[in-house]
Image (tube, rainbow, N blue to C red):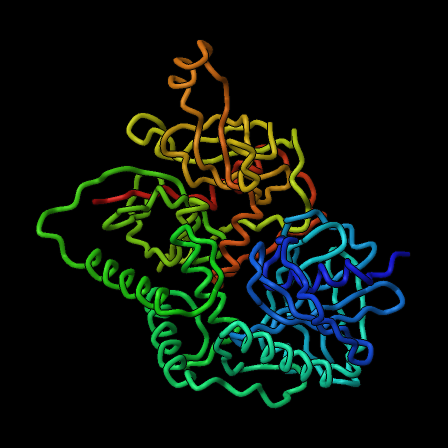
Length: 477
């Protein structure tokens, strides 16, 4: 059995605040042993700029736990186990138990052994000596002692203060911290920083993000909300508050207010697309289906069911979430923890060619023909199920009726024919469920994970599940 020590331990600790970026390096001379914990400082991604400090320990069975701490007062968590059997970059849902408290988390695998967690910030205030953390994920359970974590946490704060001062970085006062130890003192710019953070939190809340309490303190929920807003603009999303972020938020709020103002002329139907419910009141679709719409209305079998509100978008991933005031009777469960495989059968439902085809919707079937999209983009997959204009934003489901993708586009056959002299057949693309889960998690939008061992359904029943959960979206401009 492999024990996570040496460079693997440092890699796990370095990846905490930059999931999947193995280029994050340990700063030379920063490693110190504090009892059973190893404390070290790390740079951010491919840069040489100080990013965070971490504390890491491993037990004899090879289970390792890493807890990170940043100058912005953000605590984060990751873990590694020798036989977890994960699929790199795939999302996993699990639980972390500390004492009598259990927290559900969403993790993302770094490799077959390690994952980072998105977990409620309250958990970090429960980390104390005499307790243990029990992590359950991918049908495996591991436990690790927290003895000595208070001393290690204090050293992690000293580490952050030391390297933040050297880099000229302001230190924020965190809302939660392991062992409830006294926080590191803030710099002289804390008052101005607190005012800026409070303004950012207020603007985030106005745009529908959840920054947590509007108190001027940077916690995990504030960082996640900032990152979600940044990603909606197509940016990397570091989640850090700044005057630049404040300015972009003010612009977004002003644009939304202008968009919601009464228009001097009547609106007209501009286009239609497809969406599907992932909870009784939340609909998922493509960003391009709702982009620029003054109103988005729901249609079912030719009937108008009223307007919906856009609550979250990502231009980069072409995803949007809408909120409906009329609860749906059926919604799709999300397949997590089971990797997508090439050649899997899929079923697609949507409302293509609204002016010509059935208003009750269309069902097509096919297979997953490639596990990446154009130019090997791993966020997407290629499917052979036929799609047409109007299918955009519709669900792609597997043989058990579980959601595994969102229809995005079809290859332009005429353009390809002009370039190659041949007409491509059934080359269509969908957004992978892992990309969707990351989008939902970043915006705090709930969904229901499907049973990993769900049984196969007859194709007619799959079609009924897809149809019952889908809705036509009408964009008015």
